[in-house]
Image 1: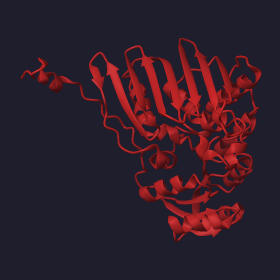
Image 2: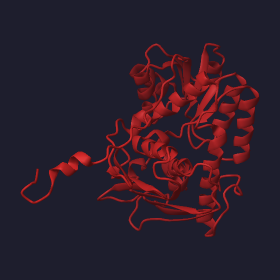
Image 3: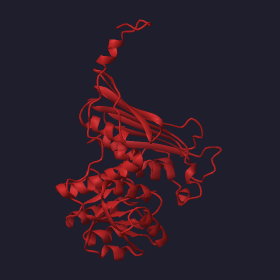
Image 4: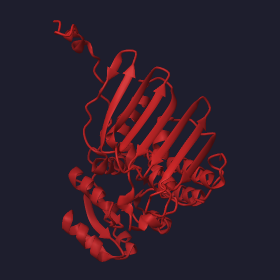
Length: 366
């Protein structure tokens, strides 16, 4: 059949169909342990929304400000018990897994206490501020036969998850370039505790992208990283909101641009170029992304389900529970996460020193 403009509509029937890939969060087959949440700040609304949807058993909520814990209890798990002291929660023998969502500085001591209490742990990101402390916690978990994972939920954002699975399946061949552009406003954090984080963009925010780039280049070790940052001339927040990163690999490269003071025309893009294809994602923000896979077979657009918030939080807890059930290392284990942190710390140091840094040589967050 020929359309009035002369195009053959039968071409549509020959468009290749995007491969079906296991990008959605997984739940364990039968393992449903009791879970305790330590720290009930704003982000935990997404944690608990995902856990309730998945049918996970949250039986305890802890926060030094018990009003926040009681609020989460009323919203999500009315039968859960509220604690002010995390040590009281850890004394419960019926709790097997704890989600630790406190601020970074107090988190290592809580993780250590949880492991010594024989609890499997999901730690909020960024995992630690010191790689050597992180290594010690990893070794403690391994000695006690426990799973220690990091809530790098960006891996299970539908677009990143599909891209990660496509690369793992060899659909674009060998990845040789990955580039990320994030252009949107961070002023929703104005007046919060996060405004006090000087390295808000390269550290607290970009840790998702440092982790993702590691997923897109599995087995590759970054050789050097160069980063810079500056303040927008009209921004109101204290931390510099403009940042960029260049990462050098042997036979590959990656870049990141964060324009966190984009007030109009916000957009987010990611592209991975391989030896046999390209996969990209773009949209107005992280919640609304369209993925396109292009190979010799043609252009394919998968219809993706879900949303980064809150579905990706089901991914992080679900992967930990699956790893416990299957007695294997979680794909987001703390041991593997140290590589993401090494890249992040190097980028932060580079932005301060104005020179290229070898990841792993900066042991503490500058």
